[in-house]
Image (cartoon, rainbow, N blue to C red; front, top):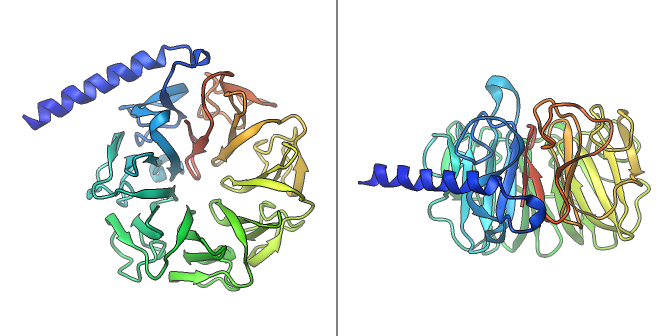
Length: 391
C-alpha cells in the first residue's frame, strides 16, 4: 500500500502547489515558499525538473513553517548539482534536489524533486548548504553530511565515500551559526571565535596558510565576531564594533580590501562604517549599513553588484538606488534581494530565468520577481548556480 499512498500524497501536493501558483502574490494570502530558475536536478522542489521563469511554489512548505532555507551546489551541464535544505521552526530539516554526494542526508544517493525530511534530525537551530555538503547545528554541536572529498565534513574520517546521513563534526561545541562554502566549512561559536575546516586553497580557512584541514581550527587573531557570511571561496565576518573582516580568494575583489590578491588571514574590508548586516554571494559581498543603505563589492562581470556597471569592485561602493534591503543572496552571475515592502527584486544575468521576472533577458537595472505585499522576508540561491528561493 505504501507506493500508491505516496503517489496519491505527491499528486495532492502537486495540485495544491499549482493552485497556489495561480494566486496573486500581492494579495498577501499566498503562504508558499517560492523558487525559480534552473531546475535540472529538482532543486526548485516543485516535483519537476523543468526550469521555472517565475516564482513557483515549493511543494508542501509554507513560509510560516520555515526558519531558514539554504541553497547548495550549482554548476553547469553535467556538473550541475543544485540542492536545498530547509530548517523548519519545529527543529526538523527537509532537503531536495541533487544527491550525488549524499548532500540530502536521507541515507541514499538518489535525487528528489520535492522536499522530504532528513531522518533523525530534530532540535536543529541552524543549517547551511555548500557546494556538495551541508551543515546543521544541534544543541551547540555541528552535524555534517555529503561529500568529504576535501575534508569539509570535519569528521577526521575517510574522505573517499560520501556520507549519506548526518555525522558529528569533531571537537566543536557552543556553536551558534555555520556556513558551508565550496568544499570548506565555517562555524561561529558563542564566544565570538570562528573555526574553519576543509579545503584550504586560496586561504579560505583564514588560518595563515593554504593547508587543507580535516578537523576544525580556530581562525587566529579574530575575536568578538557577531556574524559570518560564506561565499564559494571567501568568508566575511562582522565584529561587535562594526568592522567587516574578510579572507580567502580575492581575484574578483571579493575581499573588499582594494586588492585582487588572495588572503589566508583576515583583512579589513575598506571604507565601511556602521555595518548592520553582511551577506556573501558566490564571489561578491554586500553590507547593509545602519542608515539602511547598501554597499557592494567583488565580482561584477554580469552586473551582479547593481552599481550600473560591469566592472569588478575591489572596495565597497554604495548602491544609492537600493533601499530597504532585508536579505540578499546570489549565485554564479546574479543577485536577488528581499525588500522591506515584501517585494523581491533581482539584477545581473538572466539567461536561465534566475531573476524570476518571466523572461530570459539580461537587464541593465533591477527586475521584479515578486511585488510588494508578497509577504517574503528572506531569499536564498544555489551557491554557484542559477536557482533562487524566497520565503
